[in-house]
Image (tube, rainbow, N blue to C red; front, side, top):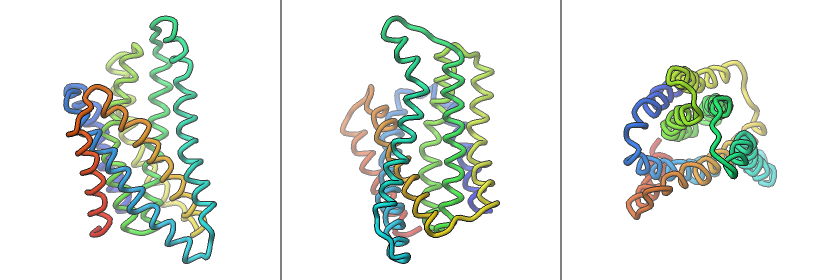
Length: 241
């Protein structure tokens, strides 16, 4: 039940992000900078080494794992841009805000959070260390997920009550994702594909979402330093977890 308990911690992280983040936007960039470093560290110091270890044990070549990594990166890029492309095209002509755009975007984040929970559960199937480090990464970036869920709902003219309901759904999604992994196990070859795909997903979230947002209004050496600190923190965790 450890994966489920850690996934439950993401509930608080997401909820706090949605409720408190809106009131602390001027400081949020520092948290996001640190989070980007954490995600980079998880990929570099835990997921990729675990992939290469499994490849060595099973006498496999790395191509399949790297294809899975690229697929993970591109899959979330395509999903995210496809859901927002209609809204972006409209913005080229005039400002349009539609509640259904906010709902569709929030639903995408909820699905993403469910996959986060699955990621924690499958991480523990690979090893306890992988599970712990993946959980740390998920807990860290789910704060911004909560913030984004509320923001996307409100800026598209959804009422606060509806935004809060979607925030709750986003917060509980990782718990259900982790619970689902108690019903099945993944073979060694499947774990290689999962770890590669999840590594690509984390790289996309860190490089294409969190890091640009961290520097969008408050780019500074302090934010850069916090990103480096986040990566160093995950290096230490990977050594001692």
